[in-house]
Image (cartoon, rainbow, N blue to C red; front, side):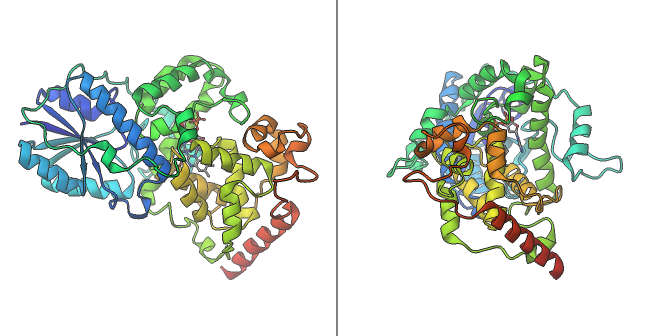
Length: 453
Ligand code: FAD
């Protein structure tokens, strides 16, 4: 009987343990992707992710065809679709890479009731949940987590890509990818994304090769948004087009400050370790005290932030980069996120939602962990009262070139003036709120919250 490989965020052939296990079984293999828009409820994929998914699936199908196989596309509830394929083809076993989003854990349970499901780990440096303290519990804080994870490194040697995948006697029916409407039609807002990204395994490899040269200088360049000092692997890693073990082994010997980079891959693992302990991390303050803070319901200001019209050049540059390319530099993500939560005193969950819809690397664990860390509502930080000053951060990280690129209204200003224009040029908004005033308002809201507790 044929074997099913059930695909989700693991759209690769190399170091893909589900494909490796299915190929090794010697049975014919049926690779299946099921689009289920209901499974994740409000975490259904956002627009940027759907754009990425379309191209990633097309790329995987093309790669599979080179091996004499193909990708079967189905729409509906995963366990129902897989059960239908079982009926049509006689397949009994499903191989899959394990995922840790709460909705995927539920879906795995549902699938295991109708077929024999074998889940494999391979999307993280170590299986989430397996890095434990001396007393066997999971870590809550990054630094000790990373220390313990490091002791288990290097990760496994990446598995080879299968040479051949035996085709079944009859292929089950497949949807046509074009009918899934994953791409924007009118307006076509994806032009900037097409320029920046090549979704798929080959695109991921290319990014990795380009980064290997730079890895030793990571520490010096990672905080400078005007240069391309980071790997830009995040959407590829999110969709599983490349495994973190592959990335690790490609760069680990680069020397210089590559260790700092490996620590960022550790953050990715850490985020999964957090959502495994707190499945609702994306929508609940980990510190209950924050349930009492009086967030402002300021729709116009939220819109100004989303559109990059706050009058703070570094924030606006970041928000426009995000809208255009589906990605934002990490340093600028921190500044822009902090600005929403503290300067505008808007609930971090509004920011989390916007990022969910617009990031090509939108990831339940990483997004929630970073937002709660910035907001100071998370298990791992008490950052609320540390209010970042965007106007100081901008020259500190040499963002003039970056602002010029994304906020063309300001491009004629000098390197000194561009961070904080004395008079806003025509077409560029005045500051939405002054820094000192915003800071005082945030601290007052925090103090009132503490009083209530
Ligand atoms: P590099 O610097 O090259 O790092 C290598 C890899 O490590 C990244 O590709 C990513 O997989 C991982 N990584 C790096 N930093 C972090 C981090 N702080 N937390 C978790 N993983 C990390 N990252 C996402 O992948 N998805 C998200 O939805 C997401 N939301 C964020 C929201 C906020 C408010 C902030 C401040 C950060 C968020 N990040 C998120 C983390 C980080 O900004 C991106 O992972 C990084 O900018 C991706 O660029 P890169 O691939 O060039 O990173």
